Image (cartoon, rainbow, N blue to C red; front, side, top):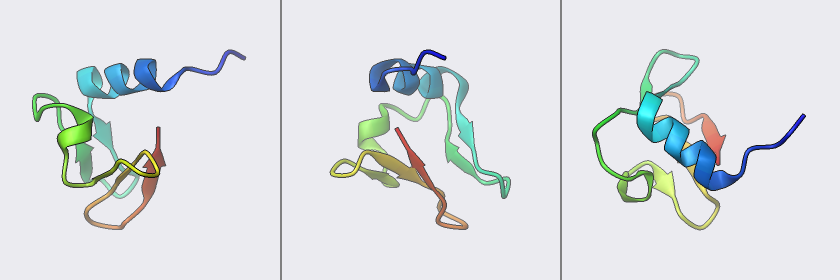
Length: 58
């Protein structure tokens, strides 16, 4: 299985969005770059669910 690189994964999330298992939207399409989101941690490169605090590493 081929592992996707981070840039491909970010483009996929930016075009499709990302929804947590709890149902909360982690990233909504049209909200700008992932790097500009308030729930994005640039040091460890992950998005955090605002409701249940699950981490989605990129």
